[in-house]
Length: 284
Image 1 (spheres, rainbow, N blue to C red):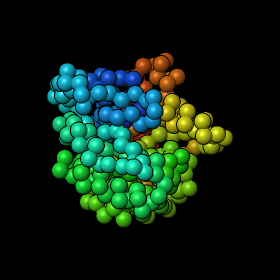
Image 2: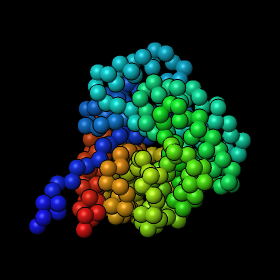
Image 3: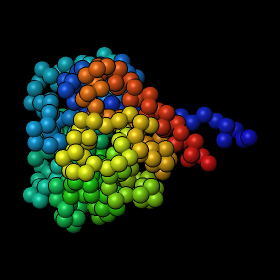
């Protein structure tokens, strides 16, 4: 056996995504990420859907100061920021404060969703957003989600390609991969230059019968990697080995039982197991 085939693969860096512990204020999110062994934490600056919980770091000076202190004390950096939604009437200039705050926090990537299904218009809006964010050192990650305007990986790739922005990327979320018209081959075809981040979780093999049930699982009842029916090993084997991984596994019932830190630790352990298996497949 050659040294190359025998060597141990180095796992990517991991971020504790906001949705995994959404009810935690940002300083506590950072502390939980630190205690559970994550390299990064993610923070939600704007609500992902009506009625969802954001934290007012853009406006609350005291909370921002406490968050920055916690980052300094723990050494946990901020990676992913959430969430910007593109609509038919979109003005990227409205997000300048978001970008200023994200840069102060040291964030790297921003999750972007689209409620607009017109690809040409979305590409123009995404290009405008990327250009506005570029001075702040932030990469815009367009997430394909089956119940939004960008429903699969192929659509996201076309939009990011047409936007032609150096800080534009596609965000692959394992659950949305499983529920959209997207194959492993589609993921493998995404140019590495369009990838800066991916998210891991698991979900039952059988798809929900209604959109309401799907949304409930997405927001409140995801499974640990290896507990469900997503082909996580081959999915992540199709992605670049060094790609940072966001652990996005909200499960309200189980978190209430074990607590956020224990759940975050279980989630990271399960994610590492799946990523280690994916690394072996990648080398075959």
